[in-house]
Length: 298
Image (cartoon, rainbow, N blue to C red):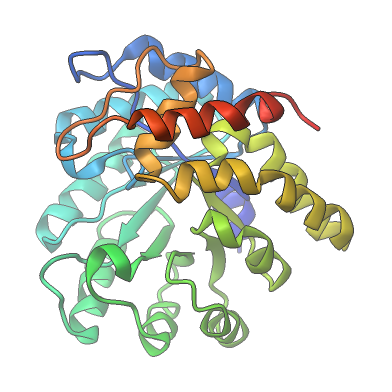
């Protein structure tokens, strides 16, 4: 059986969706951003996830983004398409469209707003997993969905041959270790503030927002943990704390990641779509203060 690091990668980035000043998808920005991510050592790109502003992308825009990234990476990185919604039929449709567009895998968020029972979550995820031949990474983020995937639910879903991984943005490290011990599910840290503890506890890799800017540092962090060099890993994590705080602890990750990429000249604008708003001046000042030290590898 193909291992999770080959199915999804290890150093994944939750890619922003570059936009022009008028809010339309920026073709030049997408090309520049994907080049940047590949150059920085990213081996998995999540398209149309939370950081990609999936709720405000049309299906046509999502398809365009997936197709554009697939064509550009040309096998140099895995392309994971976000297909989760609160509607099972809609998620099944999006999964099939993503497969047709050439995605390598699917990211499936726990259904949001409806707050289904655990049995409903299982039924939803199985329906999507059965819809294509692509491997599935579950996305457990109760702070956004309003409901968490219980450990028993994850264990049950792990029995499906195409459900292979979890992006964990729940932050319950003991539960994560318990599910890893009981199943073959690969865990990916979805909380940049906790990248090191998840990796040290057995996570396969990261799905990082901060990685839009410093995927190279994340690659070094993953490598250090895999070598057992925790001293280097701690130093790397410490060096990333100011940037992580500026992106993840100010307004919102998607907003601040775009602001950082625009400041670095990777994308043309920091435009986001309502209900998101661009960075406030005080947040931009905080970001500008930390970017110079992190623009090049240590």
